Amino acid sequence: MDAGSNTVSHSQPCISCGYDLVGLQVLGQCPECATPVERSLRGDLLRFSSAEYRGKLLKGVTLIMTGIALSLLSFVLVVAIGFLGAIALVVFASLSLVGSAASYY
Ligand SMILES: [Zn+2]
Image (cartoon, rainbow, N blue to C red; front, side, top):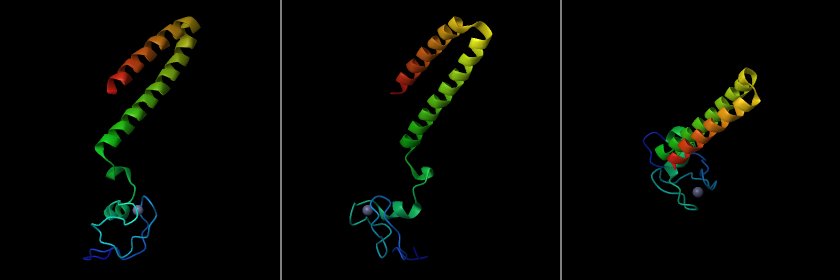
């Protein structure tokens, strides 16, 4: 985009369909798929995504990290108190995790 211009001055593919947006209005839409031109110009960075989407990513990462922590905890418990005691504690912790994850949705 030129400084002070409202049109795309260089070859820029649409972020959704790949259509070349050169010459189109910055505030317009892609003629092929109706995606806003501005969205293709700013890229596909996470900071431009919706707060709802970022919240879902955060929940997913939290669940993954909790799963890793439970795996490490189960290993430590097996070493410290034996297999059956560790299984009981990990099952209890997993059920708590599933209960908390279910409350998100
Ligand atoms: Zn498009």
